[in-house]
Length: 320
Image (cartoon, rainbow, N blue to C red; front, side, top):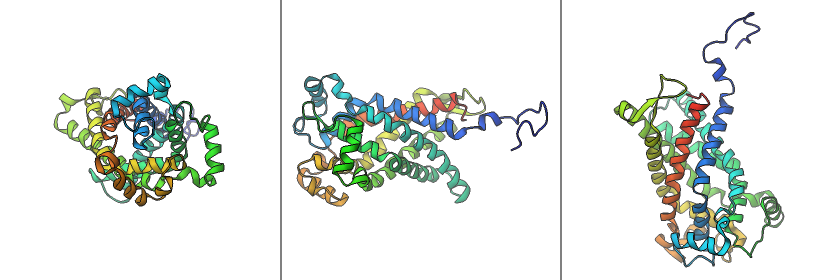
């Protein structure tokens, strides 16, 4: 593209050229803000989920709501946000990469492979989720270790200390990637079905009932977007469906990430081994799906806020 100077003195930029500049950066920021808003909303539920999934000995006899009450009594209300600093450091690049990659993969799949319709959303969502996980996994590892600690029994003094300890005690760089395989296997259906469900509901809603469910975009009146409360509803449904499909792999990932912190860590060295161990020791409901009720309460509003915030940020940053 010729520069304004090359085009001659006083020459105007082509329509929309200014908005095309730094599109990837604005998309990155929109995804990062969406991820941070979503995770901050549900941070206390995230902490309790980790404690229940890995059967922390202080809380393993409790259910979801009793654990939510017990954590503040034992550790203060800030105990519900333990590990949230590491979460924010991780979730901004995670959300940014995921949403930006989804848009790019969708274009590539449609242009290079000739696949469109609902299928390309499923493929692009899966690939975007995997990309974001691989890029930010060490931060997730540290966040989980910090969140699993209970007041008075701290092994890690903070984010930097946790990085140092894992690196020196657990095999160097590879120590940060324990549980990566079940995470990737679980993320493919989770992110895929999440983007697929939201995108499908959005397109059906805007095509079948545009006046009832849609409104003109703030940055481009020619583009229809869902109303905010409909966005929240579609995002929540997408989160519930995706979570149900991928939850056992999420449990497996958490136990592998905690590694040496757990007394039975030698029985949870591989994905298949961990799945078998959890199933044999605790069964389906109390093992592979332990904490699922909490996860519904956590992931439904989380995905609702994530998709809604991203849709709003797209309008504020002129991405439509």
